[in-house]
Length: 148
Image (cartoon, rainbow, N blue to C red; front, side):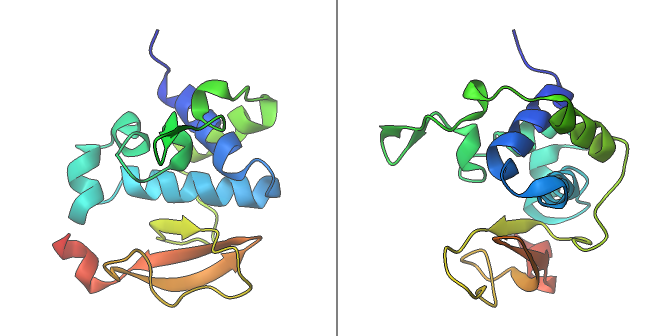
């Protein structure tokens, strides 16, 4: 049985940011939905007009969407998650069009496992540092992103 958009989003929220508190989970939901609703660039092509599943399962984007990482089983994947009421609430919040103001139009986040955030992300530098929330750094698109 295929998961609904709501179920997929609740699972990715729990898996990617379950330990980051309400705002951390809302931030991940915001980035995910920003990608779903992107009007230009790579994510606009991948989402094909708003497809949550395409965004979540885009290869190389969310570690939690993959059962294997670096040719080894990834036990922290969306299939092993058990979302609770809070995860569904945040999924519904994001699917209803809400976004965390601090995140704005950010399309990327990462946990650099260091005190400072790199100035640019991803590797092609199509994102520029916007803010740090919890352990995650958030990046908004540059003009270069439209060409991806």
